Image (cartoon, rainbow, N blue to C red; front, side, top):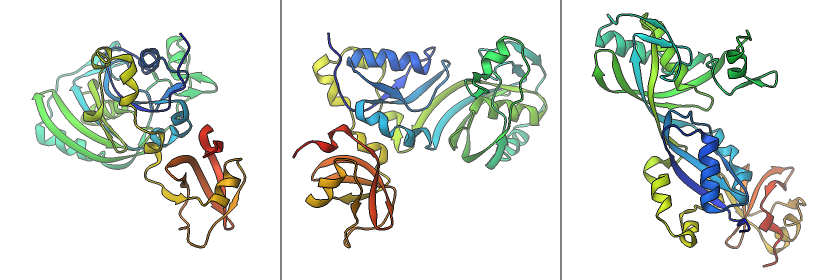
Length: 300
């Protein structure tokens, strides 16, 4: 059966125990899609929102990779692990003596711009190799800190004296496992991430997503109805409707003159009629394409 050249964005609710790539490949097979990519890795033990881009939408997936994301994290105090989550080997057990007020104050101290070290057991690459590769081989490697931003932190509830759930809204590049570990280190008792659900990516919410089980009961010919158009990934950008003359140049990837009536906001979305063409920048009163859909040179 030949693959379908479908385009659009599907919002998957990734199941527990499946890697992001495995979830991507499984979803790609269900849709019988020729081309697909995901927009930000979720660990196998994490669940929740994983937007998957098909076809032309993959050209604009970086806008979600760079987006803020929201999580519901469950953090277990008193137990430190090698991976900073429940999958790793326990490296320390300590009695939790911190009061709830102390825990709340500690959590709030991580709001704003902070410096964070990625976990050694992560896919982040150093000198062309994933960090987890160094860790599994017992090799030492320098891990550089990075600046991230925690926009919002909300303590949802104490499950017990040593476990609580936390809502986190953070910038790209944030490791919630590292946040859990750092909270434990600051409290002095240690901690690890015992559960994680991604609830939001940019303007997409988990309530809009579908599970693998829900996908399995939908007729194959109706799956395409679940796809959002590719331009939802860049809906926050300014928009320009091209004239016939502008389109005649842009459709071949050529710059075109910016009309006096066009607003100069960039990068911008380009449209010709109801057709989304791609994105462009403005340079010296010229619209210069950055990334165009393959449909951009279609005769209308």
